[in-house]
Length: 533
Image (cartoon, rainbow, N blue to C red; front, side, top):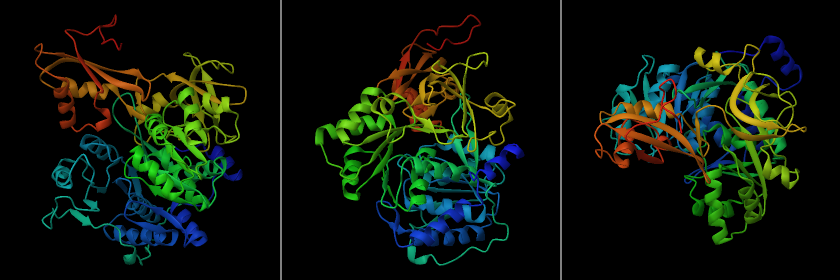
């Protein structure tokens, strides 16, 4: 793991940005302070801070007994249920390193995570896409000699006691069974690797983002202050809860920092979630533009009242001015734009910003020590107001990806600046306005899709002669994916055939092309490459 220079790290410690607190200790301290208050609930369980803390201990003891120790990587692929947080904090307690896979990641992505990180275990829950039985059948195909076992949490869909020996079935969480405290000799420190987040990329190969306890908790504390969180706040989480945005911006961790409550939605369906917001007294909710647009249409039809809703956050992709204004009117609340990346830098519009700033910019960075600069194609600094490539470094922006020297050479400068791939302008106040993307990655409603990855699998289809994938503008998602396919035999394929092939290859559902068109040949550049138009 590439670390900050020692002199820089020392400065962050002296400034109080980095402390000795770990994520395992973070929950312990909140349990002491807010013990009987509700910390988290899902569609079937509700845990107080004391219960969440005890569940983490009990699960940590169980995982430690199965051989998970400090530094061991564990893929955690759990949907929006309380067990997601229990398992995370259990691993933090014993120094295990979660890899935050999303429920939508397919078998192909999981195999890639295994190849890079060599996990000792996979802990997962059932998902709508793949039954538990099919997941177990694929276990033998996962690469990495280090992988020793797999744990299924929740309802064992289709599984029986005949499951393979290296697969354990854990029932849904029962708080009455949590009374163990792990006995661990080698406990993590705040500057140890805490977990690995995932980043999309133009190559289609996932990049793993190493976050330490100290840098991540600093961003959480800063976010909680900016969002003015208190113990009376209730956050509804309709997005995948393991994603960086609903986890820490301010996310569940920010809510718990302040002593509030997290409510996990099973899915972002507007009718169910809007009713849930009324029932739970939701005060803050994080959305991406595509979901915000769906909720807006539902709200304009039903016109529900949300007397406690303070903040409707929108991040993951640029939000249009018109939609931002409509959201504020329809929900009678403040829209807060959030622009950031799992690699570090996060910007927020402030709650007291004027309307023009709230609807037209993507906000101001968390920390005065977040360094931001905008450069032209040759790396020359640009003045305020001009659009160019965004570079950043700071107390919670990583200095390198995990086990990926090639990506590090292209994504980080020798001085430690991270090349975000975003095109932005920055005004005299430091507020950022996103103007586009420099990298070829497609931002589909906040999900990053690498065209080259889809093209690779299309070219593997024996019916396909050639193919190219591009992003096309979309009013709701920001961008949609369009695949242009040249069949070997004209008329031999349909759009459905293309999507079925990719699905069977193990691609996540959000990577399947939104549009498929067929052509006799593709346009070429002067050097013979497929033209991305």
